[in-house]
Image (tube, rainbow, N blue to C red; front, side, top):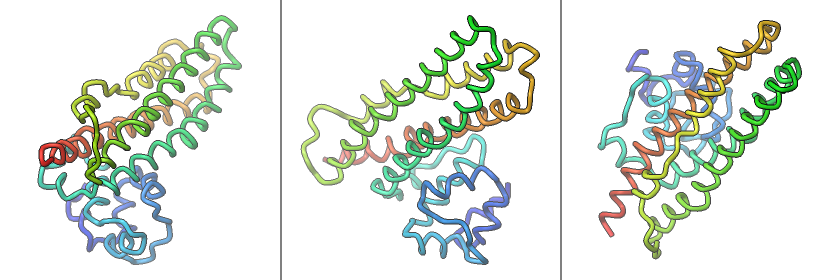
Length: 229
């Protein structure tokens, strides 16, 4: 990955061509495809997205092990960050998980009944866990950030509470992937199984980076606001 691509003067098409994972981020920013030769800065301006924020998120997704510096974090607008996180939740719940579940249903139909029951229960349990995880953030954490920004009373809640109880939803997804790798009967070794394994690994990586954004970008920024009150 060439560092020079992460610059507002780079062409948006060149940046996205450098890492296919970045293409999935576009709807979360409200950015439509079809950039022509526009630069990253020009596309961001057209869609009302802060260029530095956009590039920061792209770095997190494109560069393995990348962790934002404090200087980068403090430049992030929290309102825009919360909008992005909520859009990510919507993407996971309304698009990626239903797509994966359709593939898993086809796999389940080929399993022995006793194995299928355990498998389906695991999948349903994961879906419920993800929903609870996102719902807690959307009903508790994000409104808390909004109150901080507006200078409203926030009670006894603080961002350290969020970090202490923040569960990694990608861990159970990893368990599901391991089940598919290790225990599926040989007669399920089809293109569908390969497709869903690829999708699960991709989602697992996506969620890991989503968690990093919450813990390494949102949380430090919120903590700074708490200290200034």
